[in-house]
Image 1 (cartoon, rainbow, N blue to C red):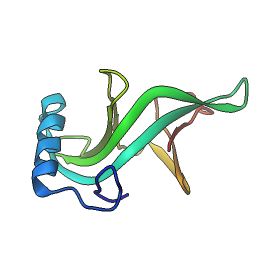
Image 2 (cartoon, rainbow, N blue to C red):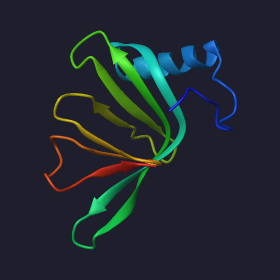
Image 3 (cartoon, one colour):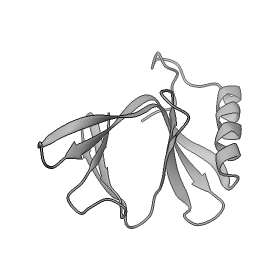
Image 4 (tube, helix red, strand yellow):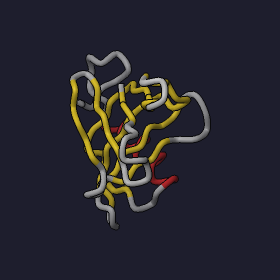
Length: 119
């Protein structure tokens, strides 16, 4: 992931990152730094019954950040499809697997066999 605009070719300006940081801090005042940005991601959930990935209603810009409190890192998808963003703390219980171009993850709240996928 790199900090880039929706075109993917130019870096976000410092002002753009400042605006994004301020928006994230309205949700979580402990966020202090944006580490990385992906301009467009979509969240999919794996359905074990049908053995298929299902698109969720979460799609937008992904921000990876540091926090001043525990947990010290997290990520948020600023959802363009609804008012509900996805926020995930990065802890030892979060299991990541990169299968380029997909990032699969499983957290402690999910069943042991359920995974989410960021595309």
